[in-house]
Image (tube, rainbow, N blue to C red):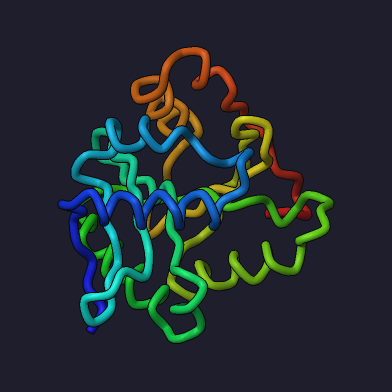
Length: 181
């Protein structure tokens, strides 16, 4: 049985930090200690039959729920856990506008196929791309939302209120061309 739970022990946080550090490139990671302070109620671990198998880290601001980090451990992948958990997370935050950021599929990169696969996963789950992309701490990202629209202004306002000013200034708008939309 798959379960989304709140971390309560030092071991939970240790497992979450380990997966966080291995699943996300350094250029996309915020300091884990900062995440623990910011996320509070939005930090979850995934377990299958009592065994740790993933993380969900949300950034919550006003009526917006940003799926900031989502990873399933390597040994638990390709068994439908990600899809099941994503639907559970969307349901948990159904009273908010739900969004996430993914590395752009419109940028030249060596991992283009993986990026497209990741985007396909989210599109199959019902998320849709916004008409803009962002440069987030130097990484070009697409914005996907679930049954809602989140303007760049609302998106950026979230970062202005949650992160220190020096970091929120590193979030920049990129307009999509007609071919990309």
